[in-house]
Length: 341
Ligand SMILES: NC(=O)c1ccc[n+]([C@@H]2O[C@H](COP(=O)([O-])OP(=O)(O)OC[C@H]3O[C@@H](n4cnc5c(N)ncnc54)[C@H](OP(=O)(O)O)[C@@H]3O)[C@@H](O)[C@H]2O)c1
Image (tube, rainbow, N blue to C red):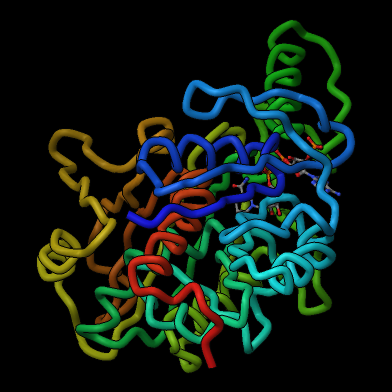
């Protein structure tokens, strides 16, 4: 079996650490692994497959003998180093927002549009975490009964912001319980015991950039420019696991039974839906798992062609590292490591 030389840029971060776990758990065919971060972490040692590997500073020469470079070090680092890595011959799978909406860069969720990988020119983008879990559930329904409109409200975990945000929630939770004042650093306000309807920056149209990513990325991944989408993205004091309340308007009526039947067969989806025993997806239970969970599937009482549902997934796994590794697996399985047209 052919083996590949893999680099992780951002290896010390939340997503980077998850990359290491996912590669190990899935027995990804690696010849070597190169752990890269900023100069702050250079020299640090990380265990990979029981071997201590030293973290190196990311420099242009880091990519000279790399087949697959998994990036999760923010958009600025990706903007700078991804083209260098691609020019050095690596295929970049980028977790940041840097290239997602560049028309020539495929934006891929393997359960939805694996064929788009073929046309890559060295960079493949991994979508935003909230978008990934939503399209994994909506695409199988859309194939049967085209979706006309989506209204989604998200409940996003602090790990989506990175390691510093998770530390802030831990510290603030303790301070609140101890009756002390909190001082926010990562978020504009206290996140412990609170909700913040602000993820990423505000745009001129009143939406946040995170909300607008869901609008644009969903259309690109599903090849469905005509779907009308509105999103409200909310940061919640949960460590891992993004949740979404989704309202869908279809072209034709669809019963909740039919949706459940379709989703029971859908790749990457697990239906957890039995109100009698309070069975529905929860972020606490989804953390550390690979599936996208869906439940509370019901007729939307406000629309004759509408369904409502609740979608949950681990934002660090399917929302980031797992999806990117699945893209890498698909790329090598289909022998698409070479540059497409
Ligand atoms: N968390 C999620 O759910 C999620 C989901 C999808 C996408 N993403 C994206 O993944 C990226 C990282 O997220 P995270 O949650 O892992 O953040 P994080 O925990 O804050 O980690 C950031 C990582 O980036 C590295 N880094 C920072 N500046 C760098 C530079 N100039 N050169 C090389 N490496 C640098 C850091 O290395 P040092 O240790 O040296 O500082 C660290 O390894 C972001 O682009 C984020 O948008 C995150």
